[in-house]
Image (cartoon, rainbow, N blue to C red; front, side):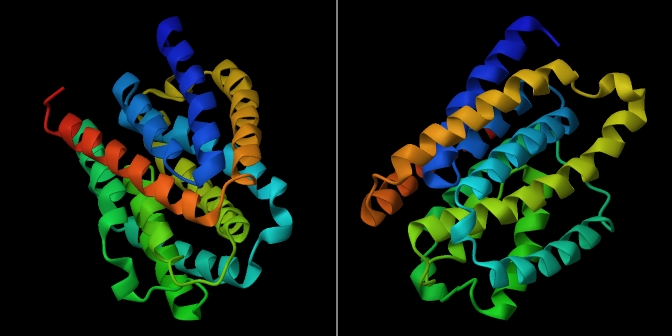
Length: 248
């Protein structure tokens, strides 16, 4: 891996972990887009999954008292269904397809979620969320906006939302790593795997960014949290769709 690419990945890791530490999403979209531009799709998925798993895991640890465990248990049942379904699909996305999926995923924030009546605290919908989010996360690398749709009608606080989403995404990224690792090493062997020194440098940066974002989160109102998240995700989604279309 070129030094310039590695440095860009490390800087992006810090910044995106900070963003995700505040909003619980958005950072993953940016990181996945940058990685896809620099390395193969399979390697991007493995690197992204590893870094996001650590960031979400650390965010989970920081907010562990706010986790809503009944939701997590049902979500994992759905995630198992989702990954088993993907095992029956032979299609894997190329770069443009990943950008398109990421862009469309981001724009899900404009779906009239209030009318859908989704609530992840309802048992059946928690399982549905796990199935859909795991499938999208594995194919596009990111599924935060889709997961967020299931939190609209919950009675959770912003801390409970971020903590519960963080733990669910920790598991989702772990599954994604397993799904993409075998195709990555199957072609050229372990030499195709990202260098370990990249993770050794990126993980502390990810943890630092997550902690800094958490400091901002505790000072933000619920209204500011939701408004800022929607605007940022929309801008990212439009840029990714332009990238998928080859405009830049």
